[in-house]
Length: 398
Image (cartoon, rainbow, N blue to C red; front, top):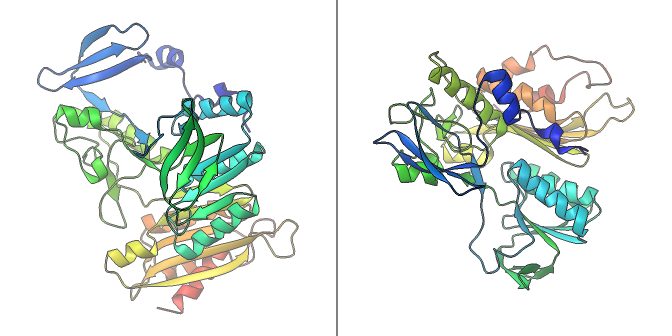
């Protein structure tokens, strides 16, 4: 939907130099962190030259890497992970130049669903393989089913409860995806099996790791080693609802962490209090959003809870282009404290999740939410916003 990849680049190395006086060195790969001598071994990828660079303060922000399963044929041409701008451009180039007819996506998370949408828009025949009972496993099963229905409605062939076992190849190129139940011929494969913290470099250096192998940090983004910091997808954070360290790979979180780390490295003082796990996505005209805890997480924490689930409309029912919206809230039994929320619906549905995210940060109860002074006009909402309707349903169960 974007005609020029340059529009997707927030700052070029030249902009960094001219406006911030930052020497942003592209095509430089750090191969080793030497904590004893406070230096980095750096390789110039275009020439192969290796040098040692000294440092006083070091911020590790190596991001995440796509999970690539160890199955036969995984290294064949035509199999792509998508977690950077360049990896996305690589897939775009293949679609433009080779004009594949069939694509198989492995995994039904955010990347998998968004790539399914993109490839459907490019008129490919798209299949999606998900080993769980539902796509988008950050939703409860009943809400995830709505997302599955949306995928199938736009033409995606969905294969749930199936696991990838191998890739069939010919002359080094992928020809088919093999699951434990079938073989799917394909011209293109997208790996949407999630990401993991890219922390091999930090681990080799002896920097302590935490949850899911992410770098262990405090609220200032400091590691346990003096002068070493970490931020972004490679670092852990604190989950305000779980009340424990957590790892989440989202650009919004990474940006906030980077800002905090930069302020502290620069001599200021800032903290990153934590996250509640807010995320949004869409499949063509169906929007998906979630925040806080889902039911299985609440159960794992041993909390007693109630739910409020409703179906309403994104606008006043009589207003043109009004669409359906499904809202589900989870609240602690007894106190009524909001624990999480999920939304699936048409245009205008997803950004309502921000009300719930704010309520989680403020530790609001359902009673407090019912009295929120939310806006109303027919083009934007029914008189009772779907968020408040769901809260009223849940209150009855307290």
